Length: 471
Image (cartoon, rainbow, N blue to C red; front, side, top):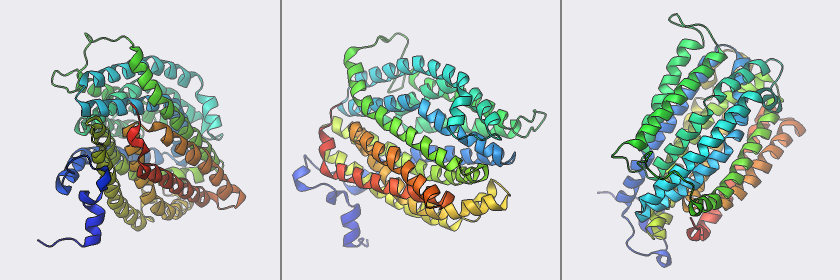
């Protein structure tokens, strides 16, 4: 057998990932360690990529209605994500607890964390539904809706707000399953729901096989139905008798102070992170929306590719988060370091292939969404910048997942506040408006955001303080 060059062994071999002074036992052989990571990561990537691809198909269907329809649906994304930020923070906290408990063999604690998250999600999810229906129009005006998009965007937002409660609970259950490494379950839940959404969009957006032509309203109705089905599938995965995370109505559904304190401590960092993310994204989207409907439509088209890159990283990150947390639970921080670095290596390989692919299809991809030449030209130019962003984005997402799996949520939150909450919108305004680079400038700002984020997270991981984070 031909051995790989020495420098590749130094980069990819697990025996070189942990220093001698950090080792607490035998380091898992490379083949076994990579196999363990990929066993969790591949279903996660398949799930996320499938969802992203079908999301693109949804956008293509909406795009046939017109650029204003694409912009209208795109405008609802950031207000919705701001509303969901508290639940995302709670899921970050729950993921750390479940992963650590799974590694320690304490599944009762893992199930307790899931029940607490479900109870919190149920109450606040109902509140968010009411707020989304009542305040749809003001929120979308703040997001930068124009006269030609405020009507369809507010209608889409109101209808899809009825799915918020299902979206919250589904995300909670799936986060717990990923923390246990059960990515195949979450893949089945979310891919099935997305297939249903695409099929309903095909029937309702343009009106086929006797169904009415509902355009943006049809896309919203499809989302509500598919989200409800996803919740039913997710719930079924934790009420089965053979489920590792089995919950029952006969369990204790009372709030327990120690668990609330543990989740609150971890979620405080997560809430700060999510608020920084959502406010930063909101302000950034507002900067781009000010360029006009056509430019914002081009921005949304390119975002589909960026989301695809994110999904690959998210799949690898889910595996890294679970394995880092589980090995800390087993009192093997050296293996947590190893799995964090394996995640980085996998991210490098995937992002390099993605960047090359995106560069090659830069002129063909926008044609899938629109036939308007100026939008196609704008999107093609931005895709060139995206090819640079992808490797940086993929690496920092996996590194952030490692720190979250360890429970080091406060540092990640501070990093997000600096980079997304401040750097991205400020640099976006500078390059887009002050320097007059337009849409290209907005995407150049992302390079600064993602690059600084990668540097800060990598320094934190290398420093090792995250190993001592309490859950």
